[in-house]
Amino acid sequence: MSTDKPVYLTEEGLRKLKEDLHFSRTKERARIADAIAEARAQGDLSENAEYDAAKEEQGHLEARIAKLEETISLARIVDERTVDTSKARILSIVRVMNKKIKSEQTYTLVSEQEADLAQGKISISSPIGRGLLGSEVGDEVEIQVPVGKVKLEVLEISR
Image (cartoon, rainbow, N blue to C red; front, top):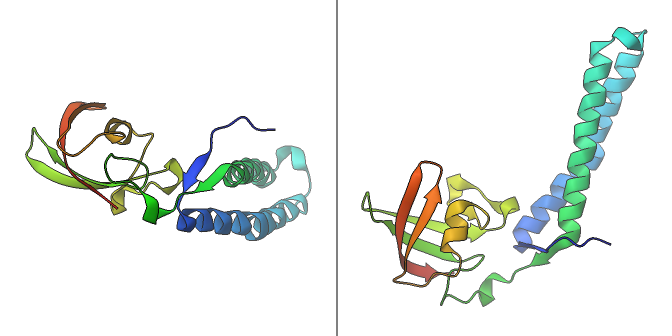
């Protein structure tokens, strides 16, 4: 029995993980099995770089499949309609002002599995995500990031 913490996901995030798992179990496993069979057909396995590479790729794929299975087994769906906007929580949309450069940014706080910086979705386990969790409108939070400290003022929390 796993003692790991739940992974909070949207329905869309869980669907994407399940699709990825299905693709990995079916198409990717078959592709790698074909590569291994083809490399085996070339003869002496002790000096066969293609065989070694295919076996290594197989190991990486199996580890990835195990991780996806674990994440899905720990998944808890968060209903986006019930997100409380009094404080920044998972699935909150938080508009902030960077006090140093006077620039506004908007972030959606999501699980690590759903993070996508290009879409403004940041993980609650990232420095900024952790720093914003629990904050309220009007709060100023100082967050340690790789390039130093950043001071953000929370302007709005919505869903």
